[in-house]
Image (cartoon, rainbow over all chains, first blue to last red):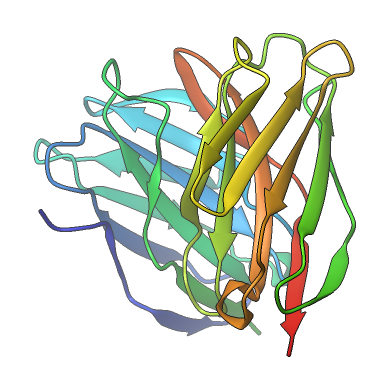
Length: 114
Length: 112
């Protein structure tokens, strides 16, 4: 059984650019959630995908968007990057309807916006 | 109403002592309360979780105490070890909606 993996591990972008972060969910999991963790803060929920559909969204602007693929992997896209987007982006996978509450987190992608 | 408040922000405990971290929530619809442990450069890892139908859950050296009427829950780490030094987050969610609402974290340092 493989855990949650994310790529890339680190990324540096400049303000106004666009970025795509990737996540492979744990084997057997059909739900992926994305979180933003600013330095020294707890993770903040961005959105969740279940069976390729967005299934809940936190308080983030539309320039944060996502996709889930048939194999349940996922992408987080951020357009028009701002300095405040600098953070650790975490992906978590879970199995909805089973022990669904348990979310397993990946190691994250550290994004720095200059 | 979605907030989870966590205290203290940082905690220093001597090796072998008891570490206690507290959380309070407002939304009575929350019914799942996990604790996550995070080491630098890593994602959060589930440590232990509780549902409100029990007042206490113990797994090894880790215990969650839950007070439904006060809307508070706490993590106790018995016989704290240097390897326990990490940041701990409490969280809450509603069954069927797996969005986790996290506390602000507690940086725990265990000193020899």
